[in-house]
Image 1 (cartoon, helix red, strand yellow):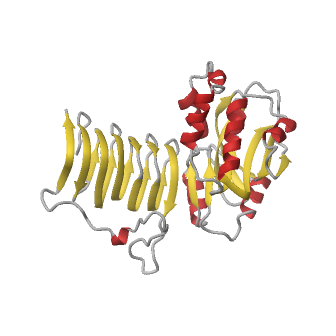
Image 2 (image 1 turned 135 degrees about the horizontal axis):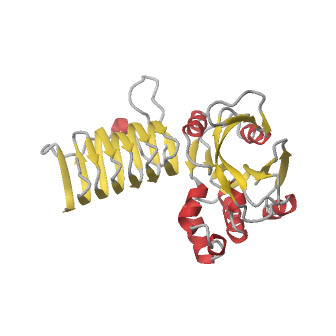
Image 3 (image 1 turned 90 degrees about the vertical axis):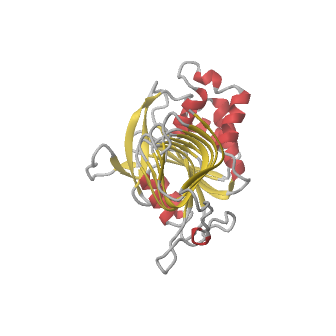
Length: 205
Length: 142
């Protein structure tokens, strides 16, 4: 995802996104698909996806995370509790096997503790159909104590407006090797490194 | 209007617009009218109406024949089926969204999903003739 030369409007910043471009290319000319968006429901994303004829499941994963595992102090320890993990994954991702045709998880995975992250990624693998794609974003500075988090508003199949929503401490050091390990049972993984310290990761089920 | 000090368990059928600012658990139907969940409203129910506006908390599915609106301060966990949806930034929404397309005649919605059986054009108003708004098998607490 690279910074657009066009001036951002309002509080957001418009960017082009190779990952988003590839994501929508993977479902081009298809209708009645089931897609997941985990960066919080927005009018822009709902309109864009439903006008393509798809069904959307929306969740603000970070708010759900705070609801389930908050407060911040001790959150990572609570994210390691197997019972809490099962409840979180079962409540939020109770879809039939191979029923989801694509997932936009944006930057949310960075804030999941190791056990919860693997459980969620495994559940996504279970519910997504073969060849379906997942788009994730990781901050480029692997050692940053906190990283900015955003709302993502889709403008079209290649551009997205990102709106800052604060900063948050990543749960792990997400180097490429770790990301590959997390998605090791998936079919393929592709990294897009951008000029503004973000890594887009496109994963094929 | 169901005030913020009122709690109801049961089924609500309405033949007029209704605002819920209290607690409701069960179901709410106002198939040809508007249901508004006020800022103090806490609803654990399925909502079926022509139009649904949420400012408070809803845990349950919404079928809005024409339009659903989720305001900034709302918290909604459940699926929405409607022809048009408006969701404000800041609203917490967790669930599925099915947009039911209008048919070519420009009239009412057509059935979009075979599994759901949701077909607004075929629904029959189930409210009893009197009174205009009714509550079936409800427990009302003040």
